[in-house]
Each structure stands twice: as structure tokens, then as C-alpha cells.
Image: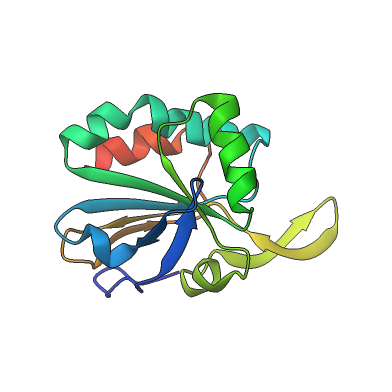
Amino acid sequence: MLNIGTKAPDFELCDQNGVSHRLSDYLGKRVILYFYPKDSTAGCTKQACGFTELMPEFSEKGTVVLGVSRDSVSSHKRFEEKYSLGITLLSDPDLEVIKAYGAWQEKKLYGKVSMGVVRTTYLIAADGTVEKALSPVKAAENPADMLKML
């Protein structure tokens, strides 16, 4: 995990429409940057739909929401269309950003140990520094919790 007060690493990733985004594009705005394991799974869907539902309130507060997973651009597009999502989903198939933000960790499931994305959320201040860092987070509660933090 990144420490509070440190400069958030800049990155460039493509969204569900193939449009490139850099974190530095959002200087001057607060950014909720959340990492999730997989498109269209139960928890990830609850989290993405929760952020979509609260998007008007995030926008009022000058906050952008960016979701990141290792899924492909086309997978993100299907996820967006299936659930009418109103957030930006970024594709990181090479795990560069996921690892840079400490979201790639050892996980245990039914006694099996493997590496994977641990649900992690950052609030990045308008100056590009880490304001809050949360991991692991509960998918269904994360959007409302982040809104309260603003």
C-alpha cells in the first residue's frame, strides 16, 4: 500500500472505450482509484454499481472515480454495457499499475494460496498525493464509505 501523503504514481491505461487516461490528467480534482479482481463477479458488480449510483454526488464534490482491474478493454466494455455503469474502467493486463499501488497480493481461498488483486481503494487529493488508502475493502460498502470521506 502507498503511504498517506506520498505522491501517487502516474500511469497511462486505456478505458472500456479504448481511450487512454493518465492519473496526471486529473490534477486539480480528487480521484477515487479503486482496484477490483474481476469484471461481472458478484462483489465487483456491487461495487461498480454502487459507484455508478453515487456518481452525481461524487461529481458535485469534484471527484472522479476510476476502477482498475486486469481485465481487457473488451471485457470492461461488456461489463459497462451489461450493468449500465457510469464510471471509467481501466484495463491493466500487465499488472503494472495494480502492483505499483500494492493491490497485487497473496490471497488464500479454501486453503489454496495464490496471487491476485486485493480489493483496494485510494482517495487521491487534487495535488496528486495519497489522501486515504484502504485495503481490503468491502465491495458493497466501499462507494458509500468513500462518499462519507469526502
